Length: 318
Image 1 (cartoon, helix red, strand yellow):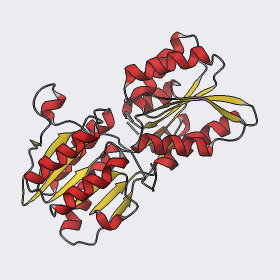
Image 2 (image 1 turned 90 degrees about the horizontal axis):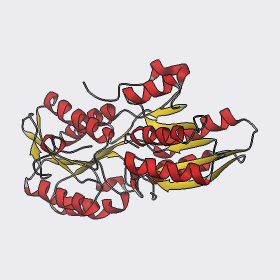
Image 3 (image 1 turned 135 degrees about the vertical axis):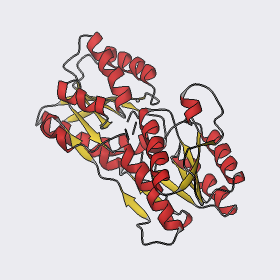
Image 4 (image 1 turned 60 degrees about the vertical axis):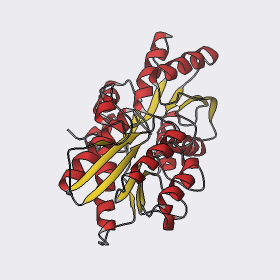
C-alpha cells in the first residue's frame, strides 16, 4: 500500500516527500513543484511508502493541469511533524491544504490550526465525521478494503478451520481501519492468531513475519496492510519453508499485480494513489472556485486476483 501503502469516529481511510527529500537531501519544509498559477496548494504527505510517492506525483501532475502552484512537505509518520508542516504551509498563505494525515487522532488539532488561519483543508484517504470543518475529501473506505481481503479468505477457506496472521501498518489512521474491517468480516472458522504492526516498513514487517511463523508454524493466511510490507512477509515465510501461507494485501501497484499473477500474493485490493491525488487536486480547486463538485468523493476499490488482473486501475502516474 506500499503503503510498503493502506480510527474511529468514522474516518474512512488510507503521499510523499518533496522531490529533494526523495533524493535523500533537502528540507521537509514545503518545496516548490513545477506548477504555478493563481491557486496555491500546500500538500502535506504522511509517509514514505510507494503509495505516498505515487500520491504526491499525482498531486503535482494534476496541479499543472489546473494551473495551480503546489508546495509539498512530508511528515514521515510523525504527528508532530505534520502539525509543523501545516504551520509552515499556513505561513505561505496557501489557498488550501491537501493533507494525507499521519493519524486521524491528530486531525482535530491540524484542522483547527488551519481553520483559525482561514485556510481550508482537503483530506485524502479519510474524512472527518464533521465534514463542515473541511473543504472536502477523497475518501477510501478502508474498512471495506479490509473486508474485501477477508471475503477472499472466507471463500478460499470454505468451511475449513484456518489460522490467520495480521501484519498491520502503523497504529492509527489507515491501518486501524483496514485491520478493523478485515477482522470484522472474517468468518467464524478463521481465527486470528497474531496481530502485530509492521509500521509500513518492510524490514520491520519481515521481522514480524519471522516471529509470527515461528510462533504459528501452522498459519494458513496472512493479511498485510500494504504491498511493500507484503513482499517482505512473503520473503520471511518462504525462507521458513512456508510457501503455502497465502497472503492478501492492498495497493494494486504494478509490482503487486505481478505478484498476484505469479502467485506470491493471493489477492490485493487496488486503491489507486493516482486516482486519489488527481481527485483531490481537481475537487479542491473546484470547491475553492464554488463549482459543482462533490465535497466527499469516494475512491473505487477493486479486489484483484489472477482472474481479474485487467480490472485493476492504474496505480501510479507515469
